[in-house]
Image 1 (cartoon, rainbow, N blue to C red):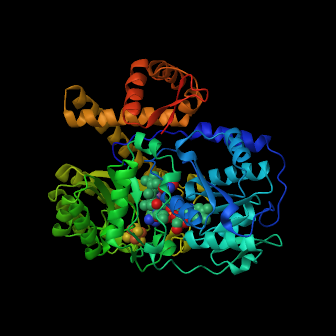
Image 2 (image 1 turned 90 degrees about the vertical axis):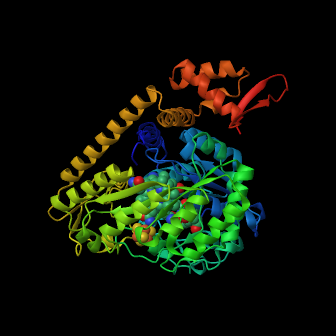
Image 3 (image 1 turned 120 degrees about the horizontal axis):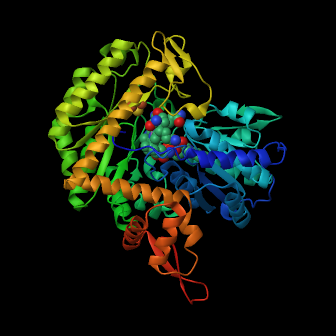
Amino acid sequence: MLLVKRRQCGDATQRQLDMEVMAGPEYALIPGPGNRAMSCCLMQTRVLFINTPFPFDEHPVPPLGLAYIAAALENEGADVQVLDLLVAQYTPRALKRKLKEYQPHFVAATCSTLNYHIASRILRVCKNHDPGLTTLIGGPHVSFTAADVIAQAPWIDIVVRGEGEHTLVDLLNALAGGRDLSSVPGIAYRRNGEAALTPPRPLIKELDRLPLPARHLLPLSKYRALKAPCTVITSRGCPFGCIFCSAPKMFGRGVRFRDPEAVVDEIEMINREFGFRQINIVDDTFTVKDRHVQGICEGLMDRGLNIQWSVYSRVDTVSPRLLRLMKRSGCSWVCFGLESGSQKILENIKKRITVAQSRQAVKMAKEAGMEVMVSFLLGLPGENGRTARQSVSLADELRREFGVYYGFHILAPMPGTEVREKANEYGIRILSQDWAKYDANRPVSEPTGFSGDRMTRILADYERSISAAWDNIQAEASKGDPLCQERVSTTATQDFVWKLLKSNAIEKLGHRKHCPGDLAERVSRMIDVPPDTAEREMARLLAAGNIVPARTEGGDGQIWRWA
Ligand code: B12
Ligand code: SF4
């Protein structure tokens, strides 16, 4: 995204993962689920959920899918914990310590395509540490690669495909009651050394009957410290069929809406109990049904909630009236997927929008007073020099005319997308099967007649323009522009907190008895930031209550921890 500096923080994690794999014992295949004794109901079942780190920090937000499935199990009486490695330093040693201390029956990881390799290695560490536990994995990537996962990763026992809430409860009950796994729809497992896929589970009909996400299990103070918004979902499914996207296949083409009042209740609770003022609504297309949006906006206004929110939308599903209503109820950001400045490409990818609609929607959203983010994809079927220039020039025009922020990515044909399944028909050559490269920032596929190198060059120009815009903001901030100053200060805070999290500095230093000043000084040395920055940022974290003091066990001193 424009003006967001992306730090490659993966090297250290990668090194740790590599060391673990090299040093680990030869893997002994455990056929089927693990064998630790479990009671016949979920009351005494311990489940450790793992939020897998990204190879880079791209706007970490609280993991919503994980919070939903954790809630479903808690609701059944299971004992559930979440190890959120996205906002912590990952080391195999610390993971093993956690396993030893908690003794879970199940370890269940979530991942997307580009961090599947990390999730897989983490589960391997778990299985090597304790072959008696059962390892599970779910999320949008493995939902479409389940048979390969079972065939290639013997340390992963079961893959949950699609929505996880009902499947996970059914699965754990089946295991507890000795029922055959073939009776559990929506999973893949190993049977006689082969991958067995059960039929898909029907989508959850009544989203309002799901327990609210178990956010109390997440390290929310870390996300608040990062100034991240809290995630909420108000509907599942998307009626459109863009060929580069797996959403319709994952959540269905019929959209299932939650009751607007229940959504507003949830947002109010997040604000009141968890202290978030920013909400990111992660529906695939929030604005697909007018009445739904209207219900939520009116509910938010009736309650007088002082929150700001952001959404993903489509340019053909908004109107000036709807956008004004959204803005009045606190929607400050809207993100539109424009994908291309070429009408021909839009048709090729079945986006079913026009370039004129894109311009119009951006104009309407800006007139309603919102900030607008638009995103483009390079390397789509039919892309050539001319169509790529049309996208760059549309982005430039919208930036100059309306001050929109824009992002460029490169097509990564993810599992579950039509463009991957029919790559030949679309004239797309898949260059790499290495999922770790599917970060949409480098070419892993090429359309006929447009090379990956050309896409990389365009992306490099875009990155340069981000750097130049950022330099400009810093220059304006030093001249006293208050908005630029706020941005620079927010980024500095996020950088600092990210370093703090990725070194587990508070966990390592906080247990010693020292005053806030001493703590800041030690933090400054540990994460290599100037002492005055550490002092300022630590004071902010303490003032906001994200890091809190506690008494030592003996009661004779003060220690520090994340709230
Ligand atoms: C918020 C979001 C982000 C956030 C945070 C991502 C996160 N992991 O939380 C940010 C902005 C960082 C982000 C970045 C990117 N994202 Co994103 N993002 C989303 C979004 C909009 C919402 C995710 C969400 O909360 N969904 C709602 C919950 C309820 O669904 P869920 O997470 O899928 O979980 C359910 C099931 O999958 C399953 N489940 C999930 N995990 C597990 C684990 C177990 C053990 C079990 C049993 C079940 C289970 O049960 C859950 C409940 O039903 C989705 C689109 C969408 N609507 O899902 C895209 C989506 C996840 N993102 C996607 C992509 C491509 C990206 C980027 C690569 C784009 C880019 N280059 O900028 C990056 C990559 C970052 C990364 N390493 O994953 C794709 C992923 C496709 C894929 N095959 O992996 C999606 C699906 C969008 C799409 N339709 O193409 N993203
Ligand atoms: S890109 Fe958006 S509109 Fe298109 S299918 Fe995916 S979620 Fe739906």
